[in-house]
Length: 295
Image 1: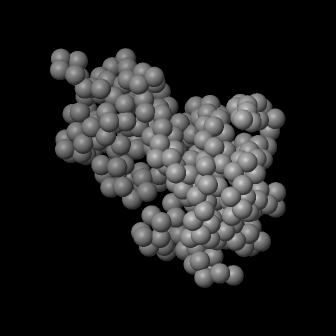
Image 2 (image 1 turned 90 degrees about the vertical axis):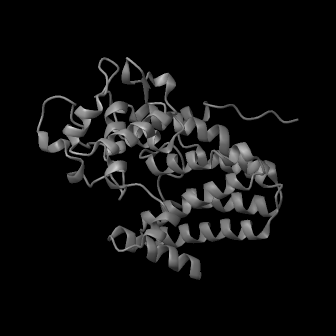
Image 3 (image 1 turned 135 degrees about the vertical axis):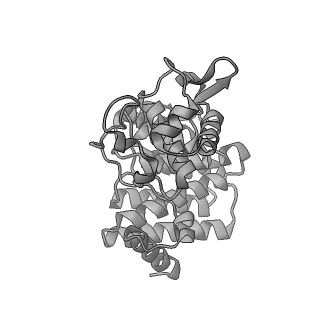
């Protein structure tokens, strides 16, 4: 096993036990396994008042502090429909409900406004905006939708977006024959192979995410490069067998290996075909975006 593979697998196991350092977690980000039966976010009115206290809701906060936890709470409630446009979001009420300061509430609402979830206007107050105004490519909103009532639509839309982005990125990346990048991609495939042999789904997922993000980043298209975070978010919240990346298996590993071989050979067509094969599990996915015409 390579040093990189050993390091990455060790870091993943440490993170799973809560022993990983912040640097390791930042380098190899991952999300919790999707919980289909996860308890929904409580409604704004009624219910147990203890559920509203941000400081006691550590799960899902990922160490963000009070400000980040409140953003997470309010974002989930908006996306799930528990907070709607029928009433304004009153900062004083939010502060009392979640037992946080006015400063924390104000900064949290500014973050949500930047994501397009709310708008603040004089004499109107802060209100939830319609879905059409949301920044649906924001990684936080992707996560909130994926674990909320819209989970099925979110995962389908992410799969369709990946089907649009990644085959093109694979074709373009074949024209950028950087040996260091090709070695890094090959390292990720090796890590996935070792992780699969040991039943280590966490390490497999991390290496898979890095593989796809790196591939997009070396495609030589800066607009595509900005979408690499979306692909990472899609991999982390997929939670259903929509693509060949969702479950560690020999077929998925083989497709990743063929993509690496095609890139090393500078064969853009082969790289694109291998990526389409990787992303296709169900026939309905394949019909989402037609194959590009040959010129």
